[in-house]
Length: 281
Length: 208
Image (cartoon, rainbow over all chains, first blue to last red; front, side, top):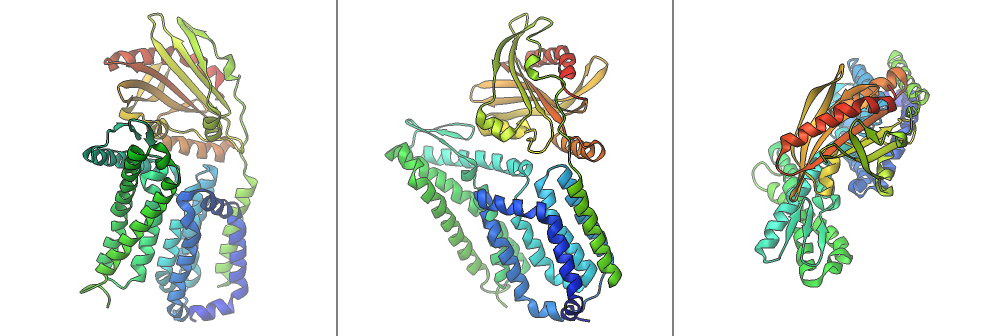
């Protein structure tokens, strides 16, 4: 029996599985969507399920025609996913709770429809992980050093450009004003969004695994340097036009502009990498 | 195939039921921290502070104590106790590892160790943070049901375990800080003496 036939034959049962799954995760998922809405770091969460859906849609023919062969060890993964949910719930650890959905879905795919289908669904399912906001313990572990790094690089550059600056932690002191390299400016916000986009982009392009990995990894330095550029720009602006220039419209605008620059760099690198040998087949 | 679906239904329903039936109790503190003694042995309270509304909104602690004490030789020590009762809507303890760097304090060193305090061992962290020219020596630990922990992940683990077994997630964070110039060893000695002398009082306030 192919997957398409199996879904048709057991449609009531599959529907019931989805309904119960929705009920179980009712206390977890809406809260996560709320965070996408409120936390600018994760506004890309809205697009992630769509991209994952597109990945699945793209391979719909293969998905439908593959043989459905229930694989019982998948049940263990379902158990593990649900345990993860319960433990995360008890510890109010949102990342554990939310990411358990992906584990449970993987387990159910394996258990009900088998390994062949799972292999095809791995990318769309794994991509869903990008919709889950990082746990704060890890977010902070990455954000603080990054913030300090961005501040240090920016200070060095500003000094080279002849701007009088001092640094205290992540606070940049100019003669008439102080700038704080806030969470948003550290680059972690655009880093995660850019990573999510880079993965999607790398899989849309036809290229070898090595180049794909390279393109995805490149998102990290691109995001960080784009953000250092933003801090430097703000510093220069504050020096010559005063603090108001650095805080108002420009700060908002620069955030967007920097992201656009980063995207442009990614696209440029992508088209470069998909050329020649090992690129488009 | 029938058995497959049945297994999935059972597992999902079991997990769902557990999530909906389990809730933690909010554990009250033994006595309000406001009644914390103003003098312990030869230490005298010299100042008392409060969390800013903004910080309290993030932290959502059930009870907080911020006090400055002065020792017989004029040593100045700041004591922070944050109690989190663990009920619905309560906040989590924030590790200084993550809070201090945000306000410009950089970690210079940090390590975990154990000191003898009375009959028991106390697990704690000693750390030095710097901000510009000033240095501050910290001793801190987390207390969960009378157990002292010096590590964030084991704090989480203990809370999960207590939630499963006792429906409790209450925990406290105790931090002693001493500003110093130059002599770190002396700051450490003052801090440890302070901790040992205050520990019995601290214990009577926090639920075990």
